[in-house]
Each structure stands twice: as C-alpha cells, then as structure tokens.
Image (cartoon, rainbow, N blue to C red; front, side, top):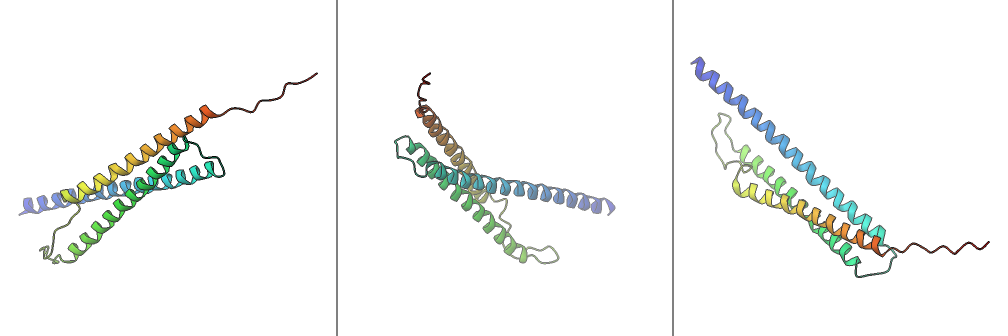
Length: 159
C-alpha cells in the first residue's frame, strides 16, 4: 500500500511541475504578444510623426505598407489574446463541473487540444511575421529616404 501511495505522490509532484512550466510558458507568450503589440503601436506613431507635413512621394508607399502591416499584426495579436482568454473561460467552466472526489462531470479542458494549439500557434506565427515584414518595409523606406537626401549646399566663403 505504501508503494501505491508513493507513486500517487510522485505523480502529483510531476503534475504540479508540468502545470508550473505550462503557466510560465503561457506568461512568457503573453508578455511577448503584448510587447510586440506595443512596439507595433509605437512604430505606427513614429511613422506618422516622421511623415507629418511632408510631401507625398512614391517611396512613401513603403512606409504606408509597413504601417498597414503593423496594423494587421496588432489585430492578429489581439485576436490571439482573445482566443487565449476564451480558452481560459472555457477551462474555468469545465473545472466548475468537476466533482470534489475527482469525478469529471462536464467537458474536458481545452488547453492541450490540437485544434486550440494549432489556432493559437498560427496566430502567434502570423503576428511575429507581420511585425518583421513591417520592420523590413520600414527599413526599405528609410534607406530610400537616406539615398534621396541631398544635404543643403553651403555658399562659398568669399574673402
């Protein structure tokens, strides 16, 4: 009997460790999403500030595409966070239906379902890709602006 009890205790410790690792992973993913969303928002604001009151040129399209890409990326991150929050609510509802003796009365938890992980992972990949594409488009615009920059000509000094 003691061996059975020791095995149950060991399994509970392993389950708690796995649960803690999943929680840490979830926290890091959430922080990354919010960080990228904040950088995208700041990049859009910076782009608007840099182009305010300037003439329109064809090379400005690169910056426009970057801003659009960051905007779509921001909403992709938002949709991912909404999916994660919906999953937490669904898991909470499932946990409410568990009998104190450990008998499951309702649905199962959704966190590890392949359908949910696939959707969340797909949104995460899109979010990061859109952020990077926007950064590359911004760099192209910046290089074009630097190549087009003509420093003001100083008049010659007359003795």
